[in-house]
Image (cartoon, rainbow, N blue to C red):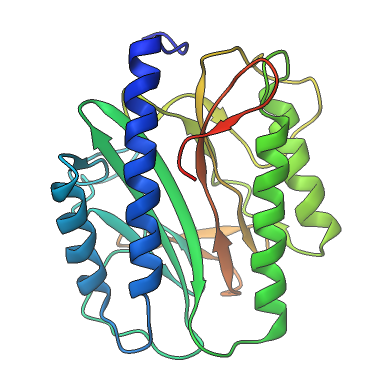
Amino acid sequence: MSLIKTEEEIDRLRQSGKILARIMKRLKVATKVGVGLMELEELAKKLIAEADSTPAFLGYRAEGARFPYPYAICSSLNAVAVHGKPSDYRLQSGDVLKLDLGVNYHGAITDSATTVVLGRVDPKVGRLLKITERALEAGIRAAKAGGTVGDIGFAVERVVTAGGMHVLEELTGHGTGNILHEDPVIYNFGQPGSGLELKEGMVLAIEPITSIGTSAIIDLPDGSYETADKSISAHFEHTVLVTKKAAEILTA
């Protein structure tokens, strides 16, 4: 499978990204104290179906996973960084929820994530979110033709560490487009000029995943990943198209 997408594929990916961006905005608005995680799951599936699309995560089995993922969204609470599963849990003030969602529009797959704070939290949590968002912006700026995967990781890591936070090193971004996880793997740390060269037409899911207290994770029995010290984590992600001058964000 080519890492360089055709013009026809790119057109469909732009449509997929627009659909995903709209749905993520609706989910963020719906994420309130008292709302159940399964309610957000059902809303996501409803909105995806209305957009003539399918959930990219539902039934997908990632490499190394023990079982296919059974939901449309990943809803990861507090110290759980990624792959948290929807449940009957109702959101409470102080919760930090990571929402991760993929859309398959006629074979064109895009992937996006955001972090939502419910009510009042420790100011350090708010700082974590701001730093992680800035790290995503830095990673996207580094994603241009002629650069490398290492440039993206270096840009992300520099922002996170300068802010006194930690990259969860085992959790990565990835290529996407025709299937959910394609090459290359995009680490959230690295050295400038290292790794695969980026070329025009590549489509990447760039996703800083960070925590307040550690760079290490624990693999939980349900397949989700939690920070090793149980500190709060954050996750922001966009799918981008690599171009000659700058990355085009498909999921904004």
